[in-house]
Image (cartoon, rainbow, N blue to C red):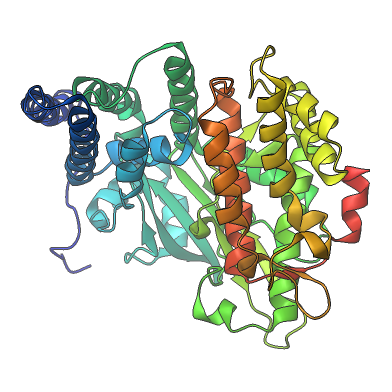
Length: 455
């Protein structure tokens, strides 16, 4: 392949080199924070608070920019922190870290070829015809298309050194946040940080990901719409995951958006049904709802569209006991049983056990509203929320804005507890479900299969 300036020829993954780079960013971050905070000492109390918020936003944005320049694992650390940090990170930090983009510049083929030489024996490599131009590049790996005896495959190749650098990168980013006074350390933060660490290590464990793919494929065998790529176990290794190549389009692509209402509704319902299967049946879910983790295979005949589940690096399993209060909340909201909703809220430790009745009712009102698309009365909805057939219009209901108003009031109560670390991952998946339903502009009545879960 002809060498391109847009390809990264080398990643800084050596421990000493990596630490020096991160230390340089840390020193700059700390100095910037100290200088800017000193500038607000002589201001009035109100102006000091406004100044501090401004400094927080500026420093978070600058730190995100600096981390983005380092590439590799630190970018993934920032992305995971932003993805699951709604209840832990200040809003300014979460917002800045969400701007961290996946590594858009791929690593040069020479680097990838070295990994393949270390992970696959000569006989296997010689049988594979690999396209040296990547299909896509991320912060920890990149994907190449290949063929084996004419069969199209997909190779997910992990960048050298990123797995060994995860702890160093996570500790360094956490220290930078602390030095820049962007976070407050405490037991809740440490608990959440441990979960982030676990997820990051899981992301680079391709044997674990392959195992999750096999489980989901077995569960969905025979499903008319959901597909999981086949894993080629004999060709895979700890740093190379070989699977069947699955073409398709993203939910927000023009091709999917151009599908008929009925076809988009079928895709939306399949995705919603998957969420209920994960929570109620499997107690295991893919917690990263990024659109890049799914593909829609459009049937030219218009009758057999498929939804492909691509990435299983962020699959989380939880004990059934953890899911029981969540199920109680969902069932209670569906049945409009406020006492059952409150029981689930307390069971999930979202409110203190001694919280006021007023706080419990406000929080349960929020959850009753969130479940609205699954059990609604036309008289309770704003104009335009239903189509002429009485189906719920996800993109036109105004639900996110209405729920946000109720949620903002609830967040101000002193009865609110830091939720268990697992809740951040589940709530992020739920937000992803709402985002998919809205992006597909779904118009659905409550599906009949809901009764199996909610009665």
